[in-house]
Length: 270
Image (cartoon, rainbow, N blue to C red; front, side, top):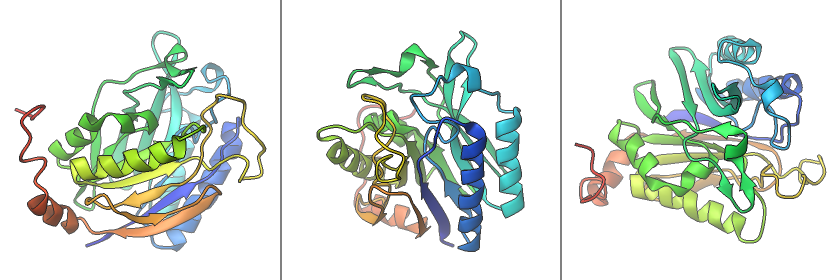
């Protein structure tokens, strides 16, 4: 059976409570469209450019608890980016996936120390590949800069996933949109998975005004990409809710035709 998924492209601000209200509204919209899963961007709890340490909460804290309540009320599985405390005084850039029969958390492995930004100054890296199952469909979790590292998405496939979710808060700049589009399509194709790439909307297109220079606050252009690397649905720079159906059987058909996982010589799981 197809999996109906919602990609919620929005612009979050510095206040976690206000952002949670926005997530509740969008989750209700997705439920009305009969989605089973809604994916929010990275930094859904609070936008980059905010002091992250004072607002970080554990996975059993009030923000995550309220997100679970939203999932319970709507019957959807909700995936959203938040910040949790790290043992060394930094925070962890965490994706929480929660809803009926699902409870998983992924800590971003590859930190955005690029283009003049140093995420690792305030964020501690994760180390574990995380997947979960919804309606019998394996789903992997990744975050933003992870998209530059194909081995993570192949690890999703090795773990049985046929869908990878990629919440992001992509930095703007010359060529960055082109890189986003190229990398997301490449990761879907070289792991032969469906890829749901869900970015923060462009703050200017959202009416929030320009972001601080150098801060990765989003460019929009979220997309659902098939396992053959083709873009099936996409948004522009402004906020929007994309609803689409994923056919998990298509992954098997593509893997029989383009057997890149079976033909690997390097990095093959034992």
